[in-house]
Every structure is written in C-alpha cells, then in structure tokens.
Length: 162
Image (cartoon, rainbow, N blue to C red):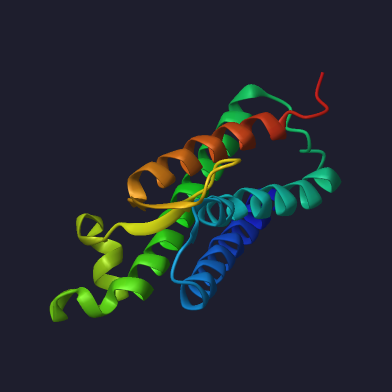
C-alpha cells in the first residue's frame, strides 16, 4: 500500500507542478528557471510524503535493503523527469502557442512530439549583476530533475537506517 500511495501522491505532485507552471506562464512573460526546477521536483516530495506516511505504519520506512531503495530512486527519477517535462511544456505552450503552425497547436501533440517544443526565455541572476534572459530547452532541465529526483529519492529512503 505504501508504494501505491507514494505513486498516487507523486502523480498529484506532477499535476501541481503543471498547474504552478501554467499559473507562472500566464502571470509573467519571463521568470527564473529555478521555478521550473522546483516544479519538477514536487513529485519527489509528493512520493516521499505519501510513501513514508504509509510505510512507517507498514514497517517499510526507512526501506530495509538497497534493492528497494534503488526501485524507489527509479520511480522518483521518472516522476521528476515527467513532472519537469510537463511543467516546461505548459510554459512553452502558453507562451508560444500563437507562433506554432495550426497542426501543432495542441498540448497532446506537443507531449508526444518533444522535438517541436520551443525553447523558453528564462532569467539568469548572479549576485551583483543585472538579470539576463536566455533561451532554455526542456532537455537540460528534465535531465537535472531526473538525476536529482532519483538520487534524492534513493538517499532519502535510507535515512535513519543503520
């Protein structure tokens, strides 16, 4: 039951990240890519919260062996990768829908044709410098969230085990 609860709450995290990204895209013409990364990592927090809540009652938290921890890491990596891709897609689709050809102006089309997802403008900020805008593609952010989500899920699932 802990695994199912974790996956369900992780999917809720994916949906929340999409809604947050959609809200941000309709509110601002550009924003820092940290907002997208936070949205991409929401499924990790959702999965861990759901799994740990039920897993503690079932004696599964922290996970007892490395195989289960690896499985949890794979699940959180996939959830975070999907969450990041869909969050990025919400922003790109909202900002650039009017510039796409009519046959590509569908969110479903964009989900299944990632090569057609346009880059978005994000702000880069460095201490003491004025913010600059640059184009960001979904590839880099999705890989970052996939890797961080998987590693953090693996590491977090062994917390407290000796």
